[in-house]
Structures are given as C-alpha cells and as structure tokens.
Length: 251
Image 1 (cartoon, rainbow, N blue to C red):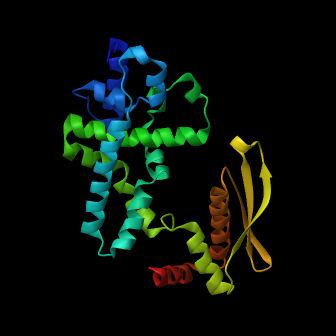
Image 2: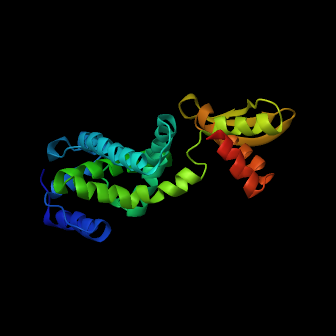
Image 3: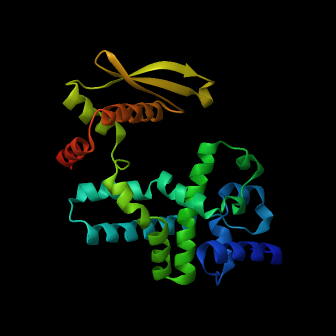
C-alpha cells in the first residue's frame, strides 16, 4: 500500500511509545489498524483490511493463554476453557486496546466513524487481535507472547480469582436457589425504539421480589445486566468468608 512519510512516522511513533519497538514492516501495523469499511470506501488506495491478521492473532492469543493456564493451574478442561474465554473475550481485549490508545489510528469509513459505541468497542478488540498477528509476523512468536503477557496475562489472577469469568445468569441462579430456594425468572417490562434499534428492559424476579433490572440492545444483554445486579444483592448479604466458601463449592 502507499504510505506517506508522515503516516509512517505516526504509526512508528505509536509503536515506539506504546509497544516499545518499531515495526520492520510498518505495512503490517497499518493493516492491523485498518477496518474493512475503510478499504470498501477507498478501493483505489491499495489498502488491505485487518481480518486476516485478526484470524492469525486470535490463534496466537488462544495458544499463549492456553499454555499459561495449563502450566499454572491444575484444573479440569471445562474450567480452563471458561477461564480462557474470560481472558480473551471482547471486553478483556477491548479494554487492553483502549489502554494502548490506538483508536485514533484506526482507519474507518466515514459511516463507521459515526457508528455506536458498542460497535467501536468491537472494532478496538478486533484490532487488538490483528495487532498480535502483525507483531507475530514482524517480530516472531516470543515478542507476540511478551505482548500478550503484558496486556492480557497480567490480568489473569484478577479475573480468575474474581467472578467476571462466571456466566452471570448461571451464577445468579446458584445464589437464588441456595438462599431463596427458587429459580429466578426474567420479565420483560419495557421495549422501546424501532425494530432495527430496539432497547429492552428486563426485571429479575426471585420469588415475589425484584432483585435487579437490566437494559440492553438485546434481551440477552438485558438479562445478563439484571443478573449482575442480582449477584450484587446476594454478595452484599454475605461476609467475605461466606462468599469464598460459596465459590469454592461451585468450583
């Protein structure tokens, strides 16, 4: 692709300041931060989008995280699979991408730039995986592994020893069945907006009580938010020792 000197300098400055090195092939870095919509809007630019690099980076990320979990935790496959999913989910890698601060460098179409915050979060996460792929191709596996350790593995203990990795609806049900003896129910209480952009509000009912509400662009998102509110309610009723014992009985 054609890159101006100013553009090369801008991307290499980011690499030096935020990653600690320059790219041997800066095209890989630029491609990692190029969305498909930009390529569709600039067909004559010779630019390539980042989806192939994202595919590669996703595989490297899963390998490094799987290797770390296998070597550091003697847990069943199912548990480690859930932990890995929590570490590599969109929210985790999107948060890492936001902290790296490359959003202003992502090449998007004019329409995509005005898209929703939720879409932007997904784009930032996709670029993070593409960036891993670019580092792997440009500098090798060890540097890609170091990058993943610094920005993802460093959060592993907090995620594993916290509750973020647990499915909120399943976790909430464990609480409600143990402490209230009932299975929670999710009730749609409000539906707003046109068909292509609806917002749903869900109430979490535990017996005759409302233990939380949630709002989202899908019923599933709203239910998960309501479940998280319910989890907060139950946690507030327990001491640290009681909560630890409760979690140990689940694991």
